[in-house]
Image 1 (cartoon, one colour):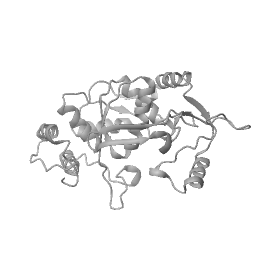
Image 2: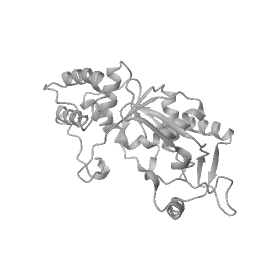
Image 3: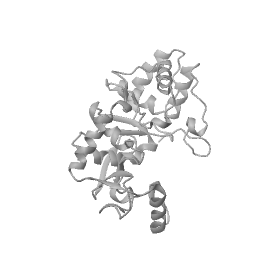
Image 4: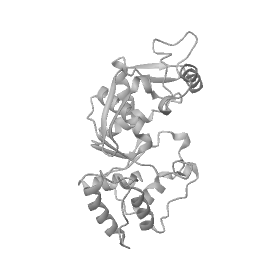
Length: 276
């Protein structure tokens, strides 16, 4: 879904479509998964621009950004476990607000005696982060209240998603981010990091998620069927219709892409699932 939308958005605006393999969590990476992903894109007629970027090869860049924030006294060590944080949130608020587990600031003033650092957190400043999503409209979030000081380096030593993607977007001169709505809540954190690191702010467009009857996101993890690469046009048409567009009457892949790109350039901001 997001791949189709981002590809069309880049092509409709005469931009570059970049592919990044987010493989920082090395223990969970399946051997050859990157080759499968790239082969799927090619089978669907999606051609990326430039070299494929692997996050696992860019660790020194994340370290440099982290050091920059640390030099500004914006980073501190944390000894809290996920369970301790969850228990603290439930004890104080009785629920997880907005689906988040806001860090209560336990280690903000230093580690308690006898505790060791597990992760490293950004000292999130107070204030509202506002932005306009190209699909969903005006958005805002108080990161310090809803999320709290968030992790930049995990307890297992792996760089956090929020830091890595911000550093990579800046390095690749990304101007427009198109992705699934499940990542909308990350946007304010990433914009905050952009500000603190002196990076330009890209625009965002968050498309709806494809879900099953129970509302779960369709994914391999949730048992969704694999892409039908034997009939790539059928797969693309189904995704295209889910995004709110009428079918493109063709049996040729290149004509689908040409027509879809033309239509996306005219109607992307008005396409939605509800016909509004």
